[in-house]
Length: 347
Ligand SMILES: C[S@@+](CC[C@H](N)C(=O)[O-])C[C@H]1O[C@@H](n2cnc3c(N)ncnc32)[C@H](O)[C@@H]1O
Image 1: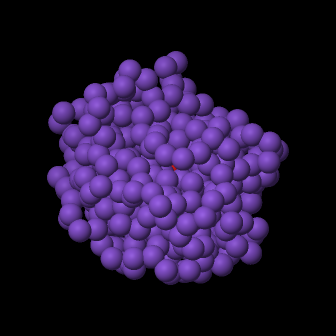
Image 2: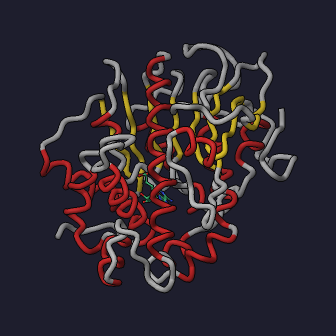
């Protein structure tokens, strides 16, 4: 077995397992054909996979142990599958609008560089902890796959000097960027999450885009259930909460405009309804960096669930160079928390 990531890095293994399983469905929302390679390389170190097999269930047949693990796995799987497709669409839309620089924060075993149809000239940066990136690169080297874009791997800790490393890797702070923060903020403490958002904002010229999740209510009753589950409890211990509902307000107060959409609404639009017994009340946020003349704010989506996918693309100007908030400076309103306390309507 390849040396596998430990600690919070194991969450990426669980995500890869979920994506590999989801890619086998006839009604799949995406085909992550690389996920299986990561899962196979990690073997029984894949947290959910190994634990469920030890419990005598496989997480796909509805069988459940006394601690409700299979139901939890199914609900979390639905969440991550819908999240994957939603952010696939968001990055694809950014590319279609002309954005040629993409940064995937805490990329883990994300395979978008290899499976999305990037336009020529797209430069994509993947950041994660050094141990994660070396595991990933070893597995990728064994497959011989080639990215569909100019891919840059940036081993870095997002609580440290990641921005410098990104710049050293060739990131161009004068170009609009599509940022993705998927599955990371809840693993950061509040001050770390806030600092990360501030650093992203500093590196974002107007028309840059930012897609992220705001898992405020994952940390509610469901977190207790996860704690009680023998294989899943280890994840609850890793959660530090991030901005807990404050990220939309924070973005709105710092020159971004866009919208937050409830996960359940997006899931219904993708025909992936969530069990009423285990509701997830996370939100997905899509925002654009506004120019200095533009109104800012992140609003809550109120339209009925769409019949298809791709909700949440924020209205705004086309992607292209512009002027506005400074790049690489701290000239904005300062690193303060949002004022409404619940991350809802602020515009
Ligand atoms: C749940 S996984 C999500 C991975 C990926 N975004 C995806 O959706 O497949 C969380 C990821 O965050 C990374 N991570 C957690 N804390 C980090 C930090 N301080 N710096 C860099 N990466 C971090 C882990 O290594 C892991 O790959």
